[in-house]
Image 1 (tube, helix red, strand yellow):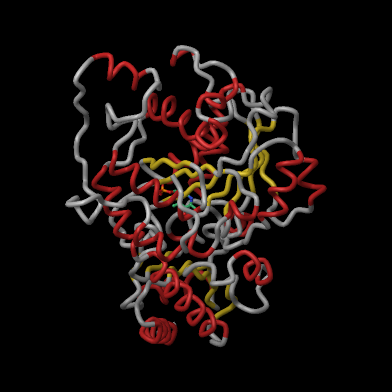
Image 2 (cartoon, helix red, strand yellow; image 1 turned 180 degrees about the vertical axis):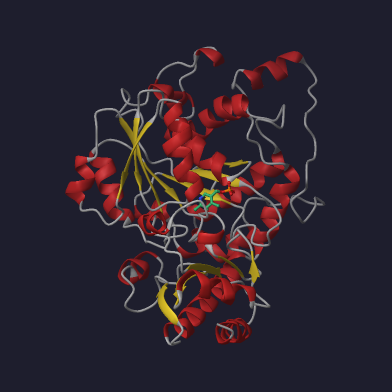
Length: 429
Ligand SMILES: *Cc1c(COP(=O)(O)O)cnc(C)c1O
């Protein structure tokens, strides 16, 4: 599936699809639920996973597969699949290898939706999670393992806390314990970081964010590195290493190899049963976004840094958090894993607390108030008045979201204009 010889920028533009003579230059949108076969035997082979091909778009669709192939190549993986959302991608990435009675270790510093998925919904399904500080020592991480631990999970650059994960440390301890490391690489994107090169085994994305990049479609993706040796730890991963009765007793790790087992199982079982499919039309929009991802990420990061530097030197600002800012707690890790920059999201506090933050936001003209991030248009959110409005001042501090915190997602406009907008809104306080 992957062509690992060309550079990320070229893959953004040309990966995943190579037209033949006289075929469409752009990825075709195959807006069809079903596919025609000459004989029932032909179709039967597909149902038995004896032949590869398309039969029903809930499981696989050619447009979605072309876009998945591009993301697979960008991440340097062996196989990939699109999902209906980032939430579905993270759910599948764990549910594909963990059952009732199993245990997962996750960084505490993750997207709020993922935290809820793990700590409430998947807990109800009988999967237990231990949340661990991403800055923990190797010993602390080792101590979190149990005999039934099946994976370790974290985010490259966490949304919204902007912590940077030491991927090598997490990969080393996960592998010592015979389990894969799953990394949500949504904020960094493969343009800025390729977690598989640092030891991650499975990479997930909310393609809704920078990959789509234009606020047009919700989607997700899972990429498998093909490197984790399921067979070596066969007892831990029976779903991949013992026969699947629903497909006439095939064993995924044997039939599809280490390169194909994880994604084939997730498609054949989880897509079949849950149907969290991305539509071909949405996949097409994601691909348009991917074509300029490398150009946009450079601008998102430039704007993020310029805005963060402006805020740092403004006396109405209490504090600024941006990993590329010298003096930031994660500066060294950010430079190691993301030398080109992290992302365009900056968080900061306005002096005067909640009331000053409200006044500031109300007076912004160019930068819009939205729950979204990672969009071409700059936007911002005051969590204490939106996503976290049920929490008390005390609870907000405990959640790492103080009431003065503003999350600003720098788009790809001219940074002088963003700074002018911020300056005039600060003057209104
Ligand atoms: C937004 C987000 C998700 C969830 O993705 P959806 O596409 O909204 O379902 C997961 N992880 C991270 C890091 C995110 O930013």
